[in-house]
Structure formats: C-alpha cells, structure tokens
Amino acid sequence: MDFGFDVISAEEYERQRELYGPLTEALRRLIGAGIHTDVDEDTVRQAQSAIEAATELLERSQRSVTSTLRHEGTGRPLAWANPAIGLRNAIAPPMVIHHEDDGRAWSEFSLSGAYEGPPGWVHGGISALVLDHILGEAASEGLTRPKFTGTITLKYLRGTPLGPLRAEAWIDRVDGAKTFARGTLSDAEGVTVEAEGVFIQPAWARDAG
Amino acid sequence: MDFGFDVISAEEYERQRELYGPLTEALRRLIGAGIHTDVDEDTVRQAQSAIEAATELLERSQRSVTSTLRHEGTGRPLAWANPAIGLRNAIAPPMVIHHEDDGRAWSEFSLSGAYEGPPGWVHGGISALVLDHILGEAASEGLTRPKFTGTITLKYLRGTPLGPLRAEAWIDRVDGAKTFARGTLSDAEGVTVEAEGVFIQPAWARDAG
Image (tube, rainbow over all chains, first blue to last red; front, side, top):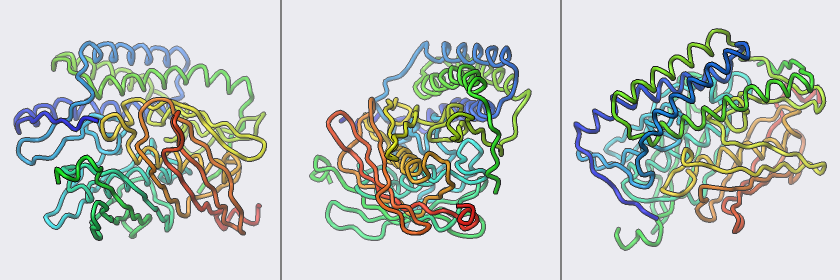
C-alpha cells in the first residue's frame, strides 16, 4: 500500500480547486438530470453522445491514481478523489470538512434527490457513508494519520430528510492503536443518526507514530 | 410520505432498462474520467461545456420524483433512482440484487476507483452503503414491505480491495415490528466486512401488514 504524497503549494491548490470544483458541480447536476429525465429516446441518445464526448476529452490525459496530494500550508491530504468528500468525485455528497482546534470535525451541506432512499428521506446507507467518513476524519486528525474503520455502529433515531444537514464527530478516547470516535447527523430539528466507531492504526504505521 | 407506485409492464421495463442503462454507464465512465483527468484547462472547460449541454437536454422534461415504478411481473419496486442500486443513478455502485426463494439477497459487482478510500481499498463508508442496502433488501423482502434501518453495526475484518466483490444478506429473526438481518461483503479470499442490522416497519404500515 502506498501512502505517498505529492505536496502542492497553496496557489496550485487554489488553481486546481477553481478548475475542478465547477467541473464536479456540473457533473452533479448532470447526474441529477439523468435520474429524473423523461425526454424522448432521441434526446437521451443525444445527451449520451455529449457525455461520451466529454469523457473522451477528459480521458486524453489521466493522472496516476495512487499518489495523494497534500496541501503545503495545512499538511492535510486533499483526498480529492474520495467518494465521501472528494472535490473531484461527483459521487461524493457535497461536504467540506472543518477541523476545530479541539479535534472536532464538522460539515454543513445539503443532500439532493440523488441521495434519496425512501421518498423524501436520505438513504440509510448514505447517512452511514457520511458518518463513517467524518468519524474517520476526527479519529485520524484530518486524515494526517492512517486509520482504518474497525467497527462502526449507527443508530437511526428517525428519518433524515433531504436538504440541509450537519455532520460532526469527535474523539471519545484513545486506547493504544484504537481510537474511539463518536458523531451525529442532524437536521434543523436535532439529531437524526448517532454513530460510534473504533478506528485502528495499521501495524506498519505504529512505529512511525 | 408517499409509497405510491406506478405499475409498468415487462415490455416497458425492458424498454426503459435498454434506454437508461447505457446512459448511466456512460455517466459512470465520465465520473471516473473527471476524477483522474490531467488535461489542460481549456480541455477541462470544453468537457464542462459538453456536460452542460447534456444536462440541458436531459432537463427538458423531468418526471415526478415521488412516484416509484413497480414491475408488473415481479411486483418489486424498481428503485431506479436509489443511490445504492439505482439503474438510473450513476452514484450507485453497479449492483444488481438477486433474491433467492429462501429470502437471501445477494449481488456480485465490481467497484472502480470512484469508490476508493485508502489507495487500492474501498472506502469504509461505501462498504457501509452496500451492506445497509442489501440487509434492507433482505429485511424488506425485496423492498416490497417498507422497512427503515433502526441500527446497523459493521465489523471490518480487513481491507476490502477495489475490483470484484460479493455482498449477501439474510434475515436472522423477526420480533414484532423488528427484523434482524445479517450479511457480509467478500472478495475472492473471503469475508472482509460483517454487518448486522435491525430494520423497523413503520407504525403506519403495521396494520396494512
């Protein structure tokens, strides 16, 4: 396994963010349009041709998938390909993670119909994706220390509506290689899902501390 | 909440599957191309224009987001918009769920780099999404009975590699409105993640039984 990093400057970070952020936003809107479209077959095929043309353009040069970019200023990996938070991954819920000095991680974001399970409600597995990720962010101090999910338990108190949500997580305690994290997903009325998880530092990373 | 269904014929189902399946596949390939592209800025902007053109075509007519299609032959909802299995949702892992007569649900599928957490490995939250969904499929008898996740616990035995995987789930026991389901995610070497969950039939659906 390769946890190698390429460090990029703050300027290069901004340049890439301004270039790829709108691309991902355009892709998210396209995904939503595709889910609910009811246009005739010819129009679907025209859209598919435009999609294939865009793919052909973007595939002309592809970077290595194994190296991760680390921001020169914060020291944090960018995780731009990540399916939970990646700025460049249109699958990811549109989360930006904030880290407080006390180790707490939080994000406020809005989930569209692309993340819907039962009509009007967020799919339970999407809530699990969001919480697994944000607990992992807290446990690994903003992904600066490699940690893997050991176990995670999610308790769904009530349905989570589509729309504006807040996720947060914090470290409960640390016991050797195990970090115990807790967190919540909330809407404006309060907590909808509670999570607790154990995150484990892999053996190869323990000596490196 | 509206669990209304529009029944569609087997022929109409096939027509839509043949129309929208390739559209979603094209979108998945585009998402992957977007994550790893390294083309120059002009080419990114050209691709973004093609994406916006495709969106404009697909947005010309959008169907209601609240009605769910049910297959005339099987009686099962199609869940085509679903972010875990939807044929029309490019966010969804490419899972097709099979139901055995004994109630077991399973799926064999392959996860691409779009679902990557640590380099080479599936994001733990994506494993949670897959398992929450397939346990829910088993618990709700193929989504024919409304059930919501009450709690779910995931135990990560080792990393889940990108590539070919198998998910399966079954009902462990039923106690009143609570259905206890269990399941696994596996690669060719065996189980990587174990899951157990409690799924709850909402009060409004209990009388309808």
